[in-house]
Length: 350
Image 1 (tube, rainbow, N blue to C red):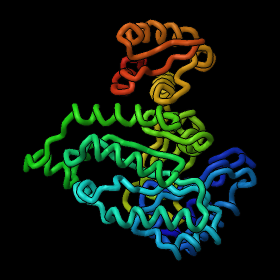
Image 2: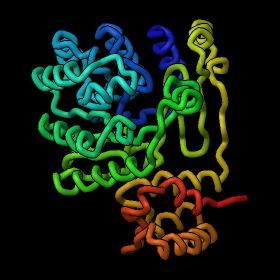
Image 3: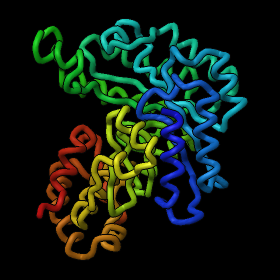
Image 4: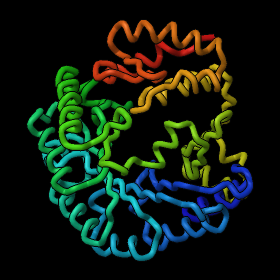
């Protein structure tokens, strides 16, 4: 797999314009912490060799707590340019971790955070999940307090969702052992927003919170619609006009790379219409603290789209889901609960 990723990096150097600076790299969408530091170095060297990394600002690696031994973290810190960790904590509570079917326990979460800080990582993000049937508002609040006590710089907080073909989906849909409670979910989301506002966390995107200056530069580029290239099985790439998807199957991906066949590694390529680009712009910008600027929207998509947008969003303002100030439209607290629904009401439908 590592060799195949290196091959793809070599084959795709024309995806960006020549000499385009790479500002962020993100190892994720899987569990990169199962790789040895030597394997990570191999991939990083391939990136540095084939792309312009002179202005690299942020290199994030996702990791499971149970992978982050002190020795592993010391090697990572000393021998790679990784300067940001995104740790899949999910919870500090053993009952909740068992419900999520996580491989790690709360003790390993605490140890991983201590280890990361001990070796000198100063930009740490953790993932937390709220809304599970085994959590309470008190246990959720304790998760947030522990994040603060450890002094982590970034939180990604997600509502529990049921993915198809998972053990949780089976328990919810078939055994009926688990009942999801929307009221509890909403209550804990409100607890999160209240806690953030009272403890110097900026909710710069619906699911993401940071201390001052610690926004995820990489994820922010997604919400700003910047060009990115994804490498590896199931990776997505986007250049503003087209979106491409690599094949999901590991064996087929490795075979394609062995044959230096980029075409065989690509599942689909979508050419986005102007209306689709508009809809994506609305969906991503609305999730952010900055929201949608009407002047910028007109510059990008023209007067007809702006007129349509302003007509449709007037209904959302009336319903209390949107607030307007100085040409900027942003979600209210009420609107954040139903952000996807609000965005879809603003979409341009052919």
